Length: 233
Image (cartoon, rainbow, N blue to C red; front, top):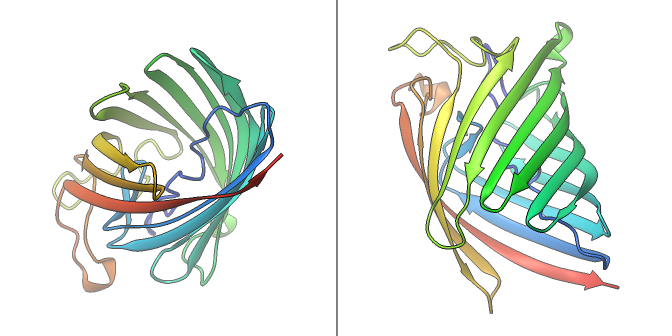
C-alpha cells in the first residue's frame, strides 16, 4: 500500500475480502487481471495481474495473494475467523509485503460486521515507513444487493488522514477518501467473474508516476478473474 512520497497499493483485497466460511474445509484459488490497480481509493499501477489461494475450514480462513505492481511484487498473507448468514462477522490479520523497495511492510487487524446487504469494515494498521513507522485506520461501508451494482465509501484515518499519498496537484491534499460503484457478472460453469467499477476521489491520482502523469480524479476499472476449486473435505 504505498503512502506519502510513494504510492499506496491495491491489495485487491481479494486478499482481505473473506466470504463467510462453511463447516467443511475447502481450498480455492483465483487468478485475474485488472485494467487499473486501485486499492482503497489509491492508484497503484495502470494494469496488474494477480493470483491467490485460500483455505477455509469452519469459521477459520487462511490465504495468500500476490500482484504485479510494476516495480516488484506485492504479497499479502492473511488469516482469521469469519462466519454468519444474515448477520456476519470477521476478525483477522493481513500483512502486506513487497519486493524491489516498491513499498515497506503494512500489518493490519481487520474487523467487520454485516447484516443483509450492508457491511462495515475497519482496518487498524501500522506501516513500517522505511524506518519511520506510522499508524493508520481505514473504514468502509459497502452496500451489496443480490442483483445490480454494489456501492462503497471509504475513509482514511490516523497518520494517513491527510498524507496517504502525494498531494494532488489540483487539490493540494492527499486523503484518498473515495467512492466506488461497481458490478460483477459471474459465469458459473467456467468459474469466471467479469467486473467493472467506477472509482472517484478528489485525491485519486491516476496515471504513470514514472512519466510524471498525475492527472485525474476518477477511474473506470475493468477486471476478469478465474476461480478454481482445488479440493475439500
